[in-house]
Length: 253
Length: 180
Image 1 (cartoon, chains in turn cyan, yellow):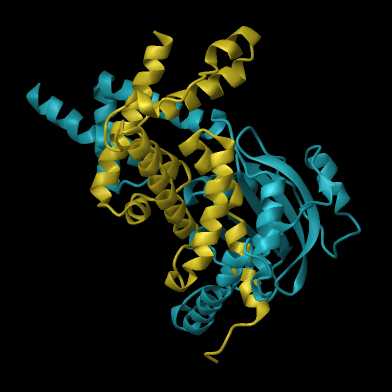
Image 2 (cartoon, chains in turn cyan, brown):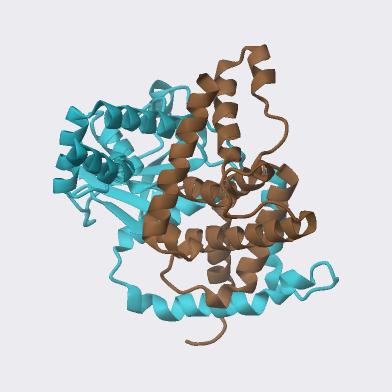
């Protein structure tokens, strides 16, 4: 019994990692085996899952107001402009450090560049989606509204549009560019997180086949190929959640 | 090559930072439980971020960087308030000082809006945590790893793990108490 209690004490802090898929194989097996035989830990594990669900799905969201975003956007690009009032002095003072930072980014970037250019492309395109006032041209009424909208607007046909579910809501779509070609762009939401999916002809592009999540600059990116089409799914969601959506999109076929 | 960067690269950096405005505001709101304070915190965060831009290392995570700044500002404000009120403590457990007034649960229940009740219930439970505990729960919710959170909070990953474990246990207990 004492051994069991020790095991409970050791394993309970691992339950969180288990639900997040952060355990190695042997730890995951140990946790699963223990949960199979310990009702108390199983109850805690179930409660943890409910807690996750509550925090992720029910916790009220408090996004920045449009007014705040506009204030920030209006002020940030103005750092090049000399300050004319005491009020804007602080923002003006930011110009030099910002220039230094940007220079640093430019100078150091090639040295850190073992990066996949398509991951950078996906993040850049995702940021353009996030920053657009009107990210989609057709709003979702479900996949049967979004998919036909693309007909005649693209020089390829998209076989399916994943219509979303309780966790991931399809916001809508638009025609966009990915790399050097036209793409169907779909936007999904999970709570405050915006998720962009670019679907494009994959000819000439080197796309990974492992379906692994790439992490860059705080973003998660999943790239994959299906037939003649390439897919780029990007968000600031955690990697596990994004991979879940990638799997659901890929399984649509 | 080493000169002043062009306007487009500066704009790119700014756009990237601005993409986190919603997440930062949500984080700030759940730390302060006050919309005005949350907006002030976010505005100040962007001002500080740009002011300290030379400290931002290329290739590092701008989202973590912004959250770190916001967290520092929140702690500074909290300490300032605390010294004015001379009560509570950042590391004390579940102090009444951390509990915000106006738990909306009862009111919402009267309205029979179950979904909102559940949402407010979990939000009220979150607000009952100490600021330190709330921080780790919110950062975990934002998808930061323990290592990233540790770097963000300036502590060891093991501390984050145990703090998160305790915080979530407290949340589970608060929910249980609420339903008892």
